Structures are given as structure tokens and as C-alpha cells.
Amino acid sequence: MACPYFMPVEKLENGAWPHPSRLPLGGGWRGHCTAPGHEREDPTQDILETCCNLGYADRCSWAPRDRSWDAVRFAVIAPREANRTSSPDNAAALLRIHCVCQQDHRPREHAELEFDLARSAWVRGHSDSRIHKMAECFLESYMKKKEL
Image (tube, rainbow, N blue to C red; front, side, top):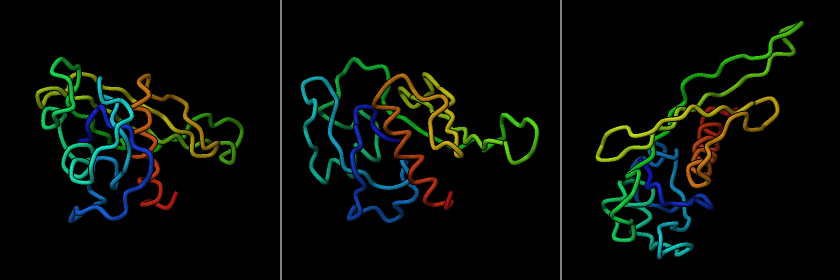
């Protein structure tokens, strides 16, 4: 699970994780914080590895005490075909991504996001720009892994 206040910006290739592909966003990311009072601050490498990419907000001193979420989790539900009209060639494959925002280790909010693979465009994104950016990073890692 990634911290909900983390705004990933670029791949972090030199992280100390034993299995980077198992990270919540499908790999390590460098970015900045969006927590109140720490907006746009860059966490240290240690904090990126232990809190931002892999941890709950309650483990970080920058996270506010009063917050809606502690962590964000993503999973691909299943690609599906949509808009099949006259022929199979017109089918658009939609990748469905389930997003769960947790607090106190329990689901608090969830959303189903959709990405149109044929158009390389989001059909349904997340309303929170931080969570949507994390979904984009997760999708990038997923597509690279699956060679989509």
C-alpha cells in the first residue's frame, strides 16, 4: 500500500526493495509529499522506501493526524471488451482497476477505474489527483509487466 499523501513523479530504479515488482505501484517511485505543511517537499531515499512507496501514513511524521485514509491499494480486476458493435475489430479493451483507500487497516472508500487500451485514455479516473496519479503509475508498471 502506498501513502495517500505521496505524489509519484518518476521511477526509482535504485531502491533497496528485494522484490520491487511487488510494491503497491508495481515498482519504486520517486516523488514529493502532499501532506499539509509539507507540500512539494521531497522525502529522503529512506522515507521513500519505507513510507511513501510501502507504508501507511501513520508511520510518517509528515502525515496529518486527522486524515481520511492511511494507505491506497490497487489491483487489476480484469480487462474486458466493451463497445462491441459490428465486428470484433471494433472492440475496445478496457482495463478495470480497483482502488481501495484504507484507514486503520480497513477499507474506507473504493473506486473502479477504467482505462481504454485501444485509445490509451482513461474512461473513468479517480477524483483525487494524488490517487489518480498513483493509478497512472500502477497502470504503467502493470502494462510494462504484461507487455500491453
